[in-house]
Length: 383
Image (cartoon, rainbow, N blue to C red; front, top):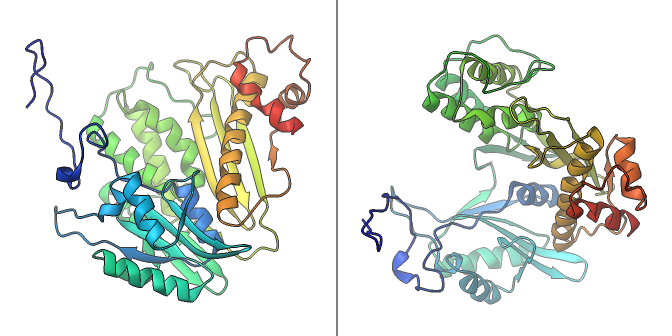
């Protein structure tokens, strides 16, 4: 318990500090997070080749994470000992390359390591050295990771969350519900202002949390979850009913997932769209994007815009800017993985006015109010 200087009392906060005794004040004393790879990065790794998994085990509530992941300096020192190169674009990604050949790729997710590469001897040597340096378990070919079931076969790699989805259905007594063909009713708009009976916030939060976890490999429910997650603190029967509809959709699509198969060309392609003033509460729009690489979709997003768009063109332009930023980051990650995108990345969006604004820097009569940072689209389009 800690007192303020003026005599006030700070609220009690629980936090997990792994090996807190080794932290140094002024350097890493306030760091309480654990390093985690983004799901976009993990999808790119799966697409590259088969992945093998190593785990640092824990007993009950006792957490022991290797010293080298507690600080960036420790990361660099440990990885230099195993001859890996750290990715500046993804701090939890390490890639060892020999010219055009990718020999070893390591991705860190808290205390799990995903390991893959084209050099079997280097892969085996890496795992041997890791076991010597830290207490590690070799789990072999990846079959289960972060709630995802991984089926690696000659025809490709298939990811799904069927087991977890069935647990969610059981948790909310929806195992025998009647399936529906869509996660949301067409044209449905939710609001916190309408007069509906309130529901238990804990139950609604649990429902939304479980369904959000499914969006790791279920982009088909992402828009619905983007909408439902906005009402965590003001939920009512209408919101809860909409969440139950997503469960009914999950019931009918339990075996759905993402299939990564071999492709002749691994070309990054983007798609983006938005609604206009889709939120009934604050009239803000929703941006969405997705990117494919070869045979499968590798990343997706759906979120409410931070500003109020004054036209459909502005809403689409904001969505395109978000997609552009993601495309630039993906190109860097793919370059790290020896999947360089030598040609320009095409991003598809269907608003003619937004396309014209991106191509014509003189077209400013209706765009004077646009945030200046959005015009990075023009720069990239010309480049």
